[in-house]
Length: 120
Image (cartoon, rainbow, N blue to C red; front, top):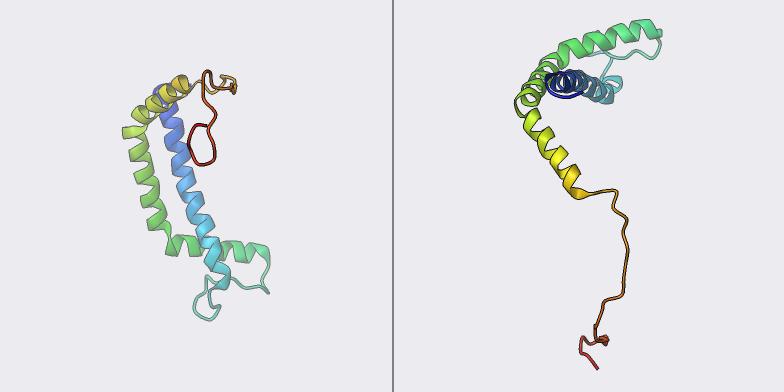
């Protein structure tokens, strides 16, 4: 997959990843929020469905703006700079020759060196 399709796929992935990152960051603090401070706090005595609804409400109330902003910036940067970055990465991959086997050889015509750095 190359060209516009590739950039569109990367932009869509970046959009989804931005929201996934925000969701995981919300999971870091949501269970420890004081239950008396809000109706969107984690309640260990409630069932999973109720807590999931609270978590979705918590994400919408606290971080939707940040997540949406992060997603939009990621999509814009991917669509504007993505082709150039992909071209540079492909060029580096071709020039690096990662599949070349590594061999070590003794140096030719080299004088032995002592630990002090002088030749004997």
